[in-house]
Length: 281
Image (cartoon, rainbow, N blue to C red; front, side, top):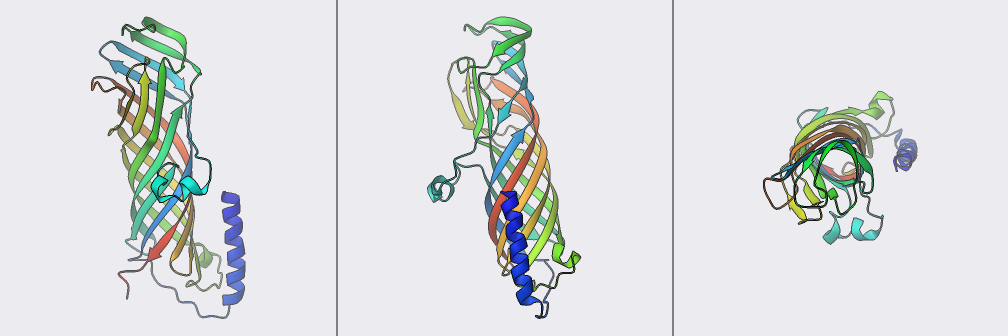
């Protein structure tokens, strides 16, 4: 997707540049500008240790693999208003506090799926009256559906604030293109926020749990490119990486049953939206 995004930028720059070379430039400060966008993401996660605690068990699964869950691209659900949150999506609203810096609030709807039928190390004990009862010391266990289903698929929700530096790429390249027709900004930002997953967990083939719960925090950094067409239309491509720590993941309807995990993630976003200057004359 990024390859085609950059090719599109190159073509637009060439076309608009040829037609606007003789027009006077009308640059103005970004301060007071607002923007909003919607888009889609793709994630990669590092392996993590997951610690499960409850009244009758206390054990850790080591080096667990996980992946995201991509919805097949189609008009439905990607452009169906009733199903917009089925794919992995991004929503963000921002405001420029100066010419180069904006602050924003965003919602990254990611999905985290533990790979089933992998074999991992287990340490701890289980005394739950199930076939899995045992004392484990660096043993191996198969993560099939009877033992554990563990997902944050509705989703791994990262609600965050960011501060982003925006630099005018065309000015840096000394390109004589009318900014009312095309602007390209490079982006560098940092953010932090809360993790509010809706985790889908089935432990020991018991009662499934699937509710929203404040589980922890996230921190992230990003780099990207912003393209503004005809003053108001925005296209954005971002690469984000960060750390997620969740010490309080609900696993069953029993409040005493919890899990904890932490891992690093990488994310690619492709977004579209609009930008306005409501506080500029």
